[in-house]
Amino acid sequence: MTPGADDPQEARRRQRWRLALGSEAAPQLGPLSGQAAEQEAVLAFLEGEGSGEGRGSSEGSGLMSVPEWISRVHTLFPQSVADRIVDDAVNRYGLTEIVTSPDALARATPNVSLLKAILATKHLMSPEVLAMARTIIDTVVRELMRTLARPVSTPFTGRRDPLRRSRHQITANFDARATVRANLKNVDPRTGRLVIREPLFTSRVRLLQQRWQVVVVVDQSGSMADSVIHAAVTAAIFSSLPSMRTHLVVFDTEVVDLSGYTGDPVEVLMRVQLGGGTNIAKALRYAEQLLQNPRRSIVVLVSDFEEGGPEGAFLRTAASLVEAGVTVLCLGALDSSGRAHYNERIGRSLAEVGAQVAVMTPDQLASWVAEVIG
Image (tube, rainbow, N blue to C red):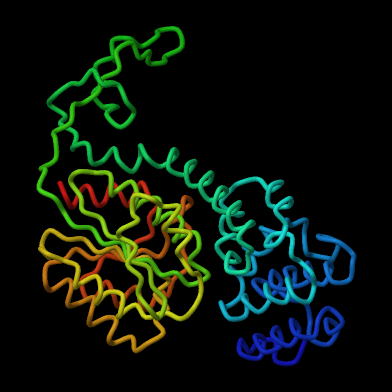
């Protein structure tokens, strides 16, 4: 057994040295595991580029495309380290195809992974490549809008009324319990299966038209790329609803109000600058200034809760919002799969001051907001 193997602190120290020294140190320091192993695979990819061996040729690096590699760098390393790695990839290893080659960008398949890579490197792009990148962003955003528009907007068409039937046969209105009861007489005696001959759908009661104010406050640090993308799309859908007045605010150590662009998520993403520090208290104070009627206001904070300033100031600001009657929802993630990476200790502290802390996909967030408004 390696000396100190049972000491977690010593194990972390060995992992850091093993990562810094490379695979040749494995006999002395042992193998890498967990995130450290993933970090080594990402760095091995870069070494393959520099040595001419080609992408994916290094052991453990896997067959990654350049956009996937950039996305993984920003996921696995702190922002300052990720920026240095990408800069080195471009300036020292010649990995320029994603930021300098229109042909390479034209061959890339528009998807969320590519979009995240563009957001991480657009500050390095020439005007020609940036124009192509904007087209890719537009393609991905349109697909996300198409996928999310119905599940996000449906909860705001009104709440279901089980006493009223509807001929509007959509999934959101399907009444499963009533359908089963109404079709019990249609059980097939041979197979024992229930035959649905008359599906039933409920009507919806229109929500009150008095507008609510919703402020979506999004952490734009590098690890929050997924959340920034989906927040931009969700805010765009929210802004089209007559019952809501929607603001979109992004922040690092500074606060940028993008509310004027909520209807154009492509423009929002072109203006986002991933990276930098985190000042959540400052962002919440700004959101507080936007509110006209706190008791008809919702503040949605999307962050990993890793506050760069004093935690006390952040928590006091959240508590102040709650005490004023604002509904405060703190999300650890806002992507399509609901993955979350956030400081659970601070999450518990936020819950203690009255904020609601959750992990939600965009459609779940929409349903939650509709419940508050309804």
